[in-house]
Length: 338
Image (cartoon, rainbow, N blue to C red):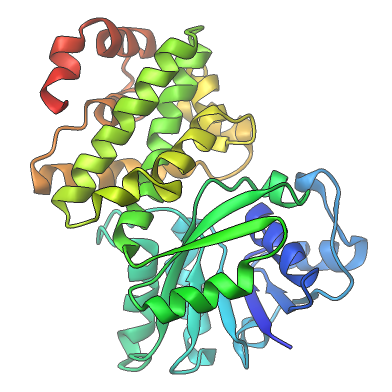
């Protein structure tokens, strides 16, 4: 029987835990929040996933080593801001040639590392773990729908194609189709930066603008992400695929998207701080802003939409004025990045 250790008991980690357990895979889940372990172990229900029933076969543990030892795959499913600290805790228990899959989406602002790069750097800090294989699993995948076995597609990305295929084989089933890619950086950039564009889309909706405005922001937003990614050496095809435009569409339009919801609340007049509190979960797009702007600066790429979101979130700019400027003064805001 194949086995997987899942680090993190949030909505995405638990939706995947249920899916994998129902495929006959031995699943062990660890969380830094001991109250989550106690609650899910006793109730076998996840309240943020519509009352999703947690299979009895899933084991919960408060010891991170138990989730890491003798596993075919270790899955990092914690928010991006906790990936490094989780990797540090897990490092003593991770074997040298372990396959590690990350599903967190973000860029570390201090180092500009993607999440697999953060994990690799932390694990290798002790001079070991040079043989670890790291993959990113990303795509248009809302946990709320995976928890209901709705048809879903996702991308397994690893520089080692054979490892990408191994991850593909573990996660593929009758409701999830898994594609493979070797463009790890491109896939991870898409996953991190689309959250910012989803904030913009939500802000426009909160202001009362319609589908025309949101379609423009989504399309031009992906143009910004793609241009930056290509400048960083990524494959342009990645941005036209599931991990790119596919994930952006679902994040920028769905009621399940915490970034879209936070943007909507900001557009309605809430401060970013109050919007995040109202959403009640980590809004990854806000955390991705500093890194996105620094990458744009280093590669001399213009990102007007992302810069606009930063102005609203971090500098108190008026959302209506900024969105109107982006949309109605197109020559100034958009034409130079066609």
